[in-house]
Image (cartoon, rainbow, N blue to C red; front, side, top):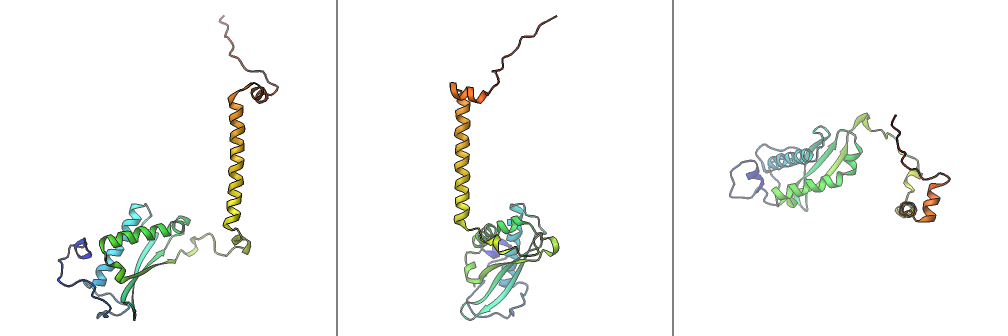
Length: 194
C-alpha cells in the first residue's frame, strides 16, 4: 500500500517524489494536496497510531514536520517529536518508539528514505520535569564495568543465600537441628472435649 492509497486518493501516473528538483513550496510551507502534505498527514497519523498502540497519552507528544532542502539530497523532511509531558518512560523508550515509527512509515511508504531525512526529539515539558539542574559530576562517574562488578557480586550473594536456604530446607540431620535452634520441633496437640 502506498501513501496515496492509505488516504484514499487516486493513483497518479507520476511518482509522488521525483528526485532532487525543488518544488514550488518553500522550505517553510507545505501546500495542501502536495506530496509533502500527504507525507505530513501520513506521519502524523502513524505517530498517533504508535502512541495509541502502546498506551501513550495523546497529549504527551506532538509531531511536527519540517521541510528542508539540501544540495546533495534535494528537498526532504524531518520529523520532530516534541515531548510535552515529563515522564522518564518516554526518554527510556524513545529509541524503541522511533524504531516502531520508522517501521510503520516504511511499510506505508517504501521510498521514505528518499524524502525522510531523520527524526529529532525536543523537550518542551515546562515545570513538570523534576530535574531542573544537572547533578554533580560524580553522577556520571559510574562506568559500565563498575555496574557489572556490582551486579556480579549481587548475583554471587543471591546464589550463596539460595544454597544456604536449600540446605536448610532439605532437613538433613545437622542442618535441620541447626535450623531449629534451641526450640523443639512443634507437634499438633489433641483437643480435649468436655
